[in-house]
Image 1 (tube, rainbow, N blue to C red):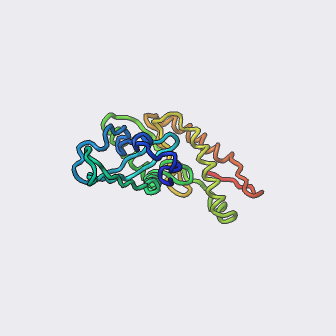
Image 2: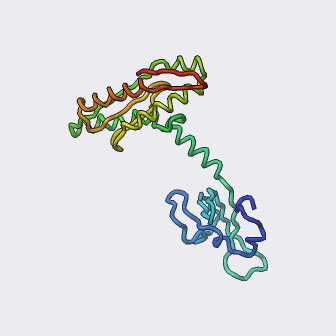
Image 3: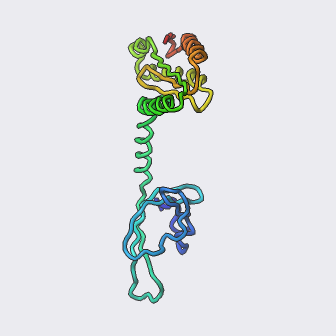
Length: 219
């Protein structure tokens, strides 16, 4: 009941494959015949898709034969719920490339992006502009109001910076505790410099209030 998330009496007598669509874990495409050409025990990961939920599983399929059975092949299925494991793997994968506070790409992801941009500039003579933004006075906020306040301020700044990312070609990352970076792809330095000046002005206009205390930040 816990695995299928339904009462036992509601599924008794029903075929297993009528309760779920079995999808390949890698391709997410439906598996037409899970039991085809199974002659020895085999184990693999599948996604069971029900009417209201989906379940990440590992299924061990073992051919078996009952003593009193004269019908065709029979199979024993051992189904393990690996949803929690997948959730943890997904979280780790997210943190490898994204910042947990702002959900922006992180330093590692920006370094990869820069590497590709430099290769593109060399190969195609493209012009890209890299902008590094270091916030001032963040330490004053964390010292006075704690790291929760600092994180809240970082989120506010991230919202401001996102307004300047007009196309998918441009990339905004958080590359340090109080540092951000923007890669303006296929952008001339003149217009990019105008954007950077406006970014700085918008950050300085930010009035951050935490528990009745107002803080200013510059960049």
